[in-house]
Length: 223
Image 1 (cartoon, rainbow, N blue to C red):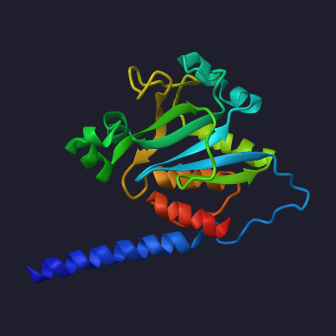
Image 2 (image 1 turned 180 degrees about the vertical axis):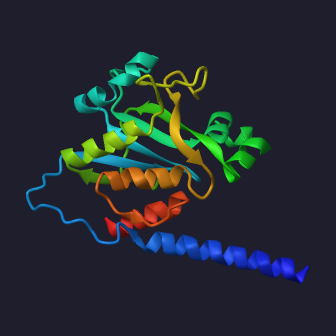
Image 3 (image 1 turned 30 degrees about the vertical axis):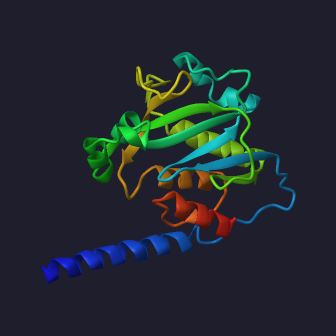
């Protein structure tokens, strides 16, 4: 019994140590050198929940053009009241079957803790109020935003060049789910994808960000 408790304490200690190192060791280790002539022109957002993060990018003409492939899936990219494109990556079972905590089921939790196929959740939003605790904002250049768009676009699975819509999946009338590249588990999940997306835009994150709190802390320290 005591041996089992000691092993459990060791595992907890290692997880806490790994999370601390992952938060306070930056990635990339050396801050990129920014050209003095760089002009900040766009704002992007990290939207944080209890266990999940999304990326929000401005729904301007360039974004609509970059994601025009969504038009073929009946996604309302041209919605007149939309100001932000919201994208999140996550485990297929948990994401699709848990729209609210009240609908939590054992099997999706088990899949999230082991390994699962991944999906992308795409949604639209109108004005987003700042500041608020769940919103972290960054100012980026046109080139940085273009790199972020490319990273997100490359996260979609494509079949004969077309993204793969998951039929009859969504939380409302507007949002859609799509097949995504990569596999999900709790250690390398939605928040590590969000961190990678931010790094694609030239921002620095912690080395490992498995939870929203660690990601928010690291980006506040290194940006």
